[in-house]
Length: 555
Ligand code: XMP
Image: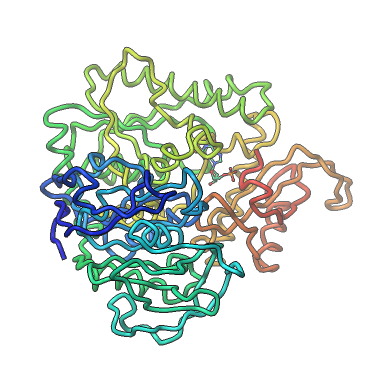
């Protein structure tokens, strides 16, 4: 197998996008210019490039590869090779996708993939595309395979299936399948509905019809590991410690003697990004913590204690509570709240940054899902959610160069890096908290009094959830102050008090979520304490809506 990605392919019959309809085969050597020559950056980690064909699990593939200790990037299928130049690519994975290879305009396989001579794993559409491109035949299945299926191994000597049993439960989701193998390929496994569920050739081109990346394929992780280590010869050196070491080196190189600022929110992303930059350049970094008065109880104190006292960072703490409350006065529309909070944040941050004098760089805690989402879903709701955080909204005369040290990390990797950097668990494994803070958990107008009620209730929720050892199992758990007053009876008196809603969800990411089945006795303790300890609250309700159709936050 070729060790680098320099084009090393032996002449091979290949179908190009242009000749797809007529089914002509062309010699690859005649069909293309000589292959692209890649130039990996000196310390680039070994990389598996996942080409995204629009499958709903594409991002999951990249995550699974990373979990196995190999760096992976997810890029659109039509990414030009120059964009991958800096990577030390060891293999390609082609994701699933909704298209059919024989549809006009269906996404194709870029020439550089086969020309690289590197191993290729096609998953679902990726397998069909590989078969179609290399001269096989793909056709609709008589019965579509959706959900659980069983495959039977025909060639147990394949390194892809090393250590796996002769029949495997897998997760399928396809309407097309490979009916004729490309020259040089053989069937490695089959299912009742497909004569070829796994295929491969001697050059490390492999196709699997099912999805190894989803949990419903129990041996999927082992299969991916086999592809990475047995087929592609990866070293598995993608670790938090290596990442920290390499990032510190590159940040130092980039920043030189420049000055960097970073907005700290108390959340894990900005905390880890700032810590990494601080480790690299020490006092050249100044962090700005804007307290918007919309944080939870004791949060500002914790941020200051961690960064200023414990880590000895230059930290500017700006208490802008009054300014934020003034801008929110009378506002009830959730998007208007977000907008005003975002604009005020930028104005406060800008004033602080200007007062510092010369600043060359701004560090942000952007993570990989943000990067992928903004590349593939420009303008989607998901991309919009973060707008207020985007200090790119600063005036044009304030020109900083962006440093985004976590730009290629998934959330779990950010946490591992945070842990590696010695940040407290409480910060590293903190549940997500929205930028607009408690303002979007006070339904209707935000006032200081309402914030105090919500803060007190939220504290009790957190306390009980932590006591019950549920905190780390839940994606989020919090209180919402509804704008409903309800009748109650406390002592011998009729009350007319606030109604608090409790929201606890489980999730793998925030795109979907399920309401958490919290034990009744925990719910009961929360309810009793909230109505007894928080003045003016006489009712607690539990939100049993999943996402979709609900969202996690109420506003
Ligand atoms: P929803 O409510 O849309 O939330 O299901 C998904 C995740 O995003 C968080 N969230 C926000 N985060 N600014 C943020 O930084 C926002 O305006 C915002 N709105 C929601 C929410 O807490 C959940 O984790």
